[in-house]
Image (cartoon, rainbow, N blue to C red):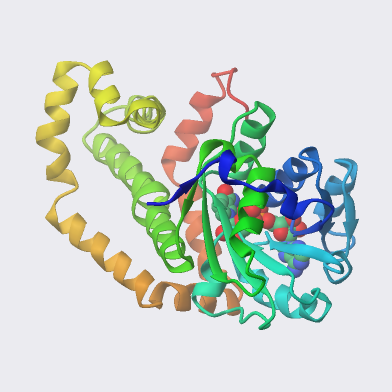
Amino acid sequence: MQMYSEKDVDASVLAGKRIAILGYGSQGRAHALNLKDSGHDVVVGLRRGGASWKKASSDGLRVEEPADAVKGAAITVFLTPDMVQPSLYSSVESNLAKGSAILFAHGFNIHYQRIKPRDDLDVVLIAPKGPGGLVRRQYEEGHGVPCLVAVEKDRSGNALQLALAYAHGIGGARAGVIETTFAEETETDLFGEQAVLCGGATELVVAGFETLVEAGYQPEVAYYECMHELKLIVDLLHEGGLRKMHEFISDTAAYGDLVSGPRVVDAHARERMREVLQDIRNGTFARNWIKETESGQKKFREMMQADLDHPIEKVGARLRSQMDWLDN
Ligand code: NAD
Ligand code: MG
C-alpha cells in the first residue's frame, strides 16, 4: 500500500495555476472553498441562474458558465452528480486547455467509459472518504479527510504530483492519501455504499425496527434501540475499531453480539453481498442506473418516497423534535 502525506507533496506544481470546479454541491463547495483558502486561483463553473450560482458568488467565489470557467484552467474538476458529467464533459471539452488535467472525486464515468477523455489530457482522481460538509469542517479545524488518489492517464508526466497538490489544497494530505486505481475506487465505493453504509445499514435498522414493532413493542422504544443508538456504536468503531466498542459495551451486549450477529448477517447475506459486488464489477449496476436516469428516474423517485414514508420516519421525526441539540 502506498500512502502519501504532506511531506510527499510538491505544492509548487499548482502555484499560479487555475482550478475550475464544475458543480457546487456537497463536494464542490467544500473543494472550492478549501482550495481558495489554501491560496489557489479557483473558478466555479455553473449553469447561469441555477440555485448554486448565488450561493457560490455570495461565498466570495468567481462564478462562470462551465464552458467559460474551464478556459485556461490547469485542472478541471467534475463535481456535479455522476449522471450529469458525460454531457457536461462534452459541452466543455473543446475549451479544455491542451495538456491540462481533468479530475474526478469518483471514478464512475471513466471506469464505465461514459466519458472518453481527449488524448492530450491527464486524467486523475482525488476521492475524499467523507461527505463534503466534513471535508470543509475538518479543513477549517486544521485537519483533513483521508483521500484516495489514482492516475488513469499521465500525459504530462506530472499527473500524480498535480493530483497530490490538489489533495493538499483541500486538506486531504494532512490525513493521508492512499494510491488506488479508478477501477478499485469505483468498485469498492459502490460496494461500500450499497452493501454496508447506505443500503446495508439502513435495511438492518428498518428490519430490526419492524421486527420489534411486529412483535408488539412500542415503536418509540424500537426507534431508540434500532436507529438512535446506532450512532453511539458507529462513533466507537470510528474512533477505535471493534476493540473500543467492546471496551465500552457491557459483557452481556458483547456476548449477544458474538453469538447473534453472525445469525443475522449469515452465509446467505454474504452470498447476496457477493452478488451485489458481481453486478458492480460486470457493469450491471451501472447499466441499470444509467437506464433509470435516461428514462427520467421515475422508479428511483418512487423507491425513495417509499423509504421516506416508512413509519420509522414518523416516529423518528417526533422523537428528534425533542432533542433540541440536533441540527434539524
Ligand atoms: P451534488 O449532487 O451535491 O452536486 C450538485 C451540483 O452540481 C450543484 O451545484 C448543481 O448546481 C451542479 N449541477 C448539476 N447539474 C449541472 C450541470 N448540468 N452543469 C453544471 N452544474 C450542474 O454532487 P456531490 O454529491 O457533491 O457529488 C459530486 C461528485 O463527488 C460525484 O462524482 C460523487 O460521486 C463524488 N463524491 C461525492 C461524495 C458525497 O459525499 N456527496 C463523496 C465522495 C465523492
Ligand atoms: Mg435502504
